Image (cartoon, rainbow, N blue to C red; front, side, top):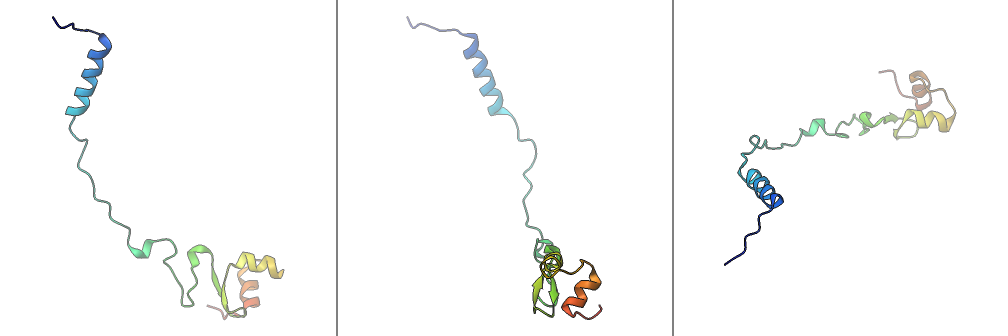
Length: 93
């Protein structure tokens, strides 16, 4: 005669597994669509190819995209729009 083992833990485990296996999904899965390219970080570029959202601006004097704060610190001028434009010889916009 086979021996039956009855254990409250086994019964509880069986019920938990059975309950998890029969549950319906919470909701339909939403397809993930990538954001439009215009909203991607770094996708904004000005006429000179600088990325304003990353803090870059064109400096005619150095002929490259620079971060005004870093340039002001390196060159020793005050961090204002007027000082930056004066140093970079950028025309008023």
